Image (cartoon, rainbow, N blue to C red):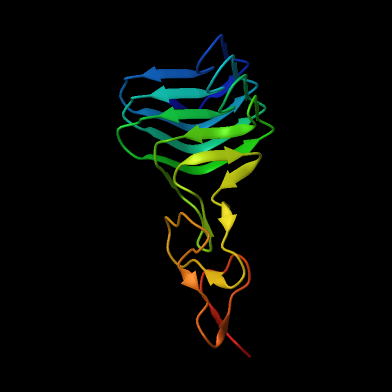
Amino acid sequence: SISGSTVTGCSADSYGGVVYAWNSGAVSISGSTVSGCSAGDEGGVVYARESESLSIAGIDFINSRAGGSGSVLYLDELRQRSSISDASFTGNTAGDDKTIQTDSPIDWDCRLGSWMPRKGSFFGDFSVPECNLCPAGYFGNTSGLFNSSCSGQCTKGHFCEAGTADPEPCP
């Protein structure tokens, strides 16, 4: 666990510039800032493989990098769902441009009216709870949405701008 810390300039030749967790228990990072960390291959900040889970809350990840994949996170075959809330990812780079690479599900704490995929590749700068807005014509009135269909299409007689949580009646 890392909590209430400022972590700067950590590096690893291959995996996990800050955390290397292979076949380990749960990994938790909270209330911290992590900047300028790197790994030669995967997981500029965290490399977790065949471990329990990952919990991230209240973190700013800034200018970290990986030579291969996952400038911030590389998650592979975790045994339980991971969670990410109140986190920002800014200026991070990887050889394959992926900020996060995961084949393990992530529960994102997104605002209503937004969604994030549960696994796969995540690119560029983004933050949670903003996530991806539900597109115009769709609404998202529950949390845990994982595709752009959100909670569904806007109901007849209502309109839904991008990021709508509850459909508004037409005037």
